[in-house]
Image 1 (tube, one colour):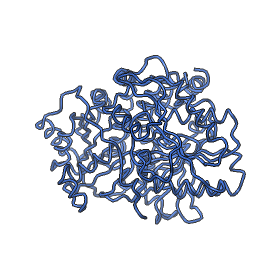
Image 2: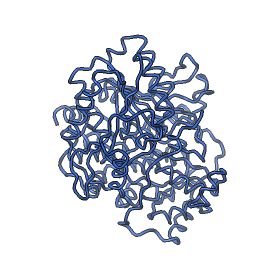
Image 3: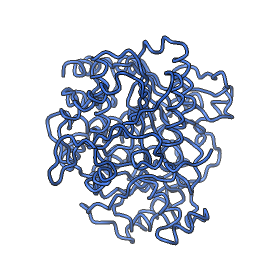
Image 4: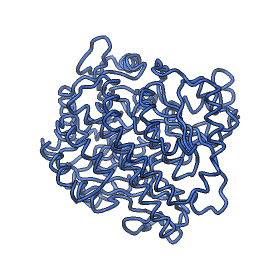
Length: 584
């Protein structure tokens, strides 16, 4: 595969945030690492009953800190208490973490009883032999709460159906595993990332963890430390603070054996090759100064492919809000925010969908651009596209929602295709094609070759369109051919992150000198060793109205109830959660 101009780019530069907690001194960093080093072999030898017990205690503490966790996030991000924004923080913070813990407990019990985590339904092989494992709904409660949603993990070629269980939970199959110490460099945008990355390294890969908080959200560190106290008390977990200097020290530390980072490709390159002229020279020569195993999730210019069809005005309005919500959520500081809306040039409702998206942006409340450099990054995109549409606040300290429509697909070096903006910005491009089938194939090639990153994308297709066998076949071909780690059909790809049973990470195969969206996966509670991608499918129009929609005033009623349900799934809790999702 030839590398396009787009694939040589990446994320925009992000300056370091001011510290709210004093950086951990080198002596304290050394002390934390020494404690983990002393206990890493004890962690490996720990039996499953003890692991389950520790997870249960961590889950209890996650519930205990949940309200304070959300309150701290809302205040720090300049969000509004008592409404959808506070509800959003429940849905991206404590709720997925608690769900992740509950799923890991279930998998550990399966390992204890049957050797490997048990799938909800049988895996199967596609006609080409690729193995597919259903992972959602994981149980009957999932089926009731997410009606019409399904998710699968597709394995890498070479994994055989009859050997799938041999490609699960490798850490737990090892007879004499040696302990390892992992450094997790936490993300600053979504509060669940650091804890979930930590859970993966501990309970799927079997490594003790030093978590360094990102300066942007380090205010949550004491609460995360409180949540993980059962593991900290045993010497299996430590949390530290600091910026680039502390990260550099830790990455090169002799006791750190593996590294996981959620950040940008620039961060990856700085860790592996260094910075400045020397770093550039090393990268060009693929001469790593830090050869440690490094897994990473490094962002994406996330595309959404719109398949033409007989959309009603209600359909257009629903998906206008859907698209806008993926940008408004977390003020646009998500790697799954829609950055490129891909449309068919000949579709007669192309402009109508854009109009619906504009209306949704106009109704959305302004958000504080809490991530450093957001105004400068948005201005950079507007400088490249002076005709950009600025919607909402334009005052000092605010970044308006920014829509850049009608891009020219022939301009491979367009900033909208090759740079992740990391702010409330999106764009639209239309591709010419003589038929819908040709358009779908063209859109897949465009996303694979022209749009930077391989983390996540979506396809939106009307059910009536799928009644045409040729279109249905083209959509399935698209899912198979898209080189992304997460593909969502009719849904926001960010949901793949939140469900925890699917894998979360870039499409495999990136070389370290061209890392793009990263390497390795997290979440993955069925513990697959060789996954390729996760595929999530859902209804064309979800009912009740999705809690993550920017215009859903029931999000605050849903968020806490879903969190507590995830901690203790039961029939007794179910009616209240369903009532909240429908009526608030």
